[in-house]
Image 1 (cartoon, rainbow, N blue to C red):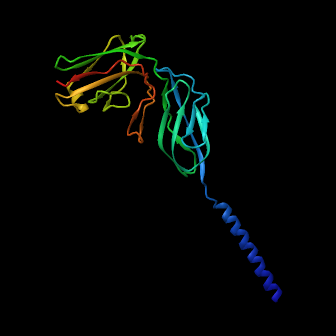
Image 2 (image 1 turned 45 degrees about the vertical axis):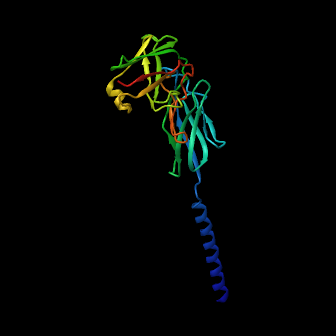
Length: 244
């Protein structure tokens, strides 16, 4: 009888230990998963081109992947965390996506498909201004190559009360403009000037750059400003006007 009792206890103990091991195996903590997505690549206009061979990496780590012909990429077994993704390819201005939250959702973290363009080959060879102390304020740019309806070019203006205005030192960045002729006039109405926050009597400086339709621009929290990677650095000197 004693032997039977001892055997029963032993059997129960072995069974309990076995169940405990199984439970532990089933409750292993998941610490990583894939980050997937795709890109849409364009020339400096609106024509989509080869989506392959863009390198997508996680800043500050060794994780990287290369897009295939469909633009798809997969970063494999990335530990959960918050990351900055970097998109790079020869001829393209570097694009970044900040604060990507990669967490355990039971599936891969999916990145929305960014549309990215080639860096601009459009230079600004001359920039003039004509305000005549009244509205509209007219900014006139000349591009090289010349802009036309058949061969439109893209440009972007930066405005500031600082004479050293540039794409890195600005108060206002105007949305990308399509230039369909050379020279090209950009009219700033009183309503537009008011919306930009410039009061009458303020001297405002303007700088113009060649841009791509898809500018690859992004907000950089470390710089506290937007970055414009596709601008052509060849530009005419800044001009200024006094707000009427």
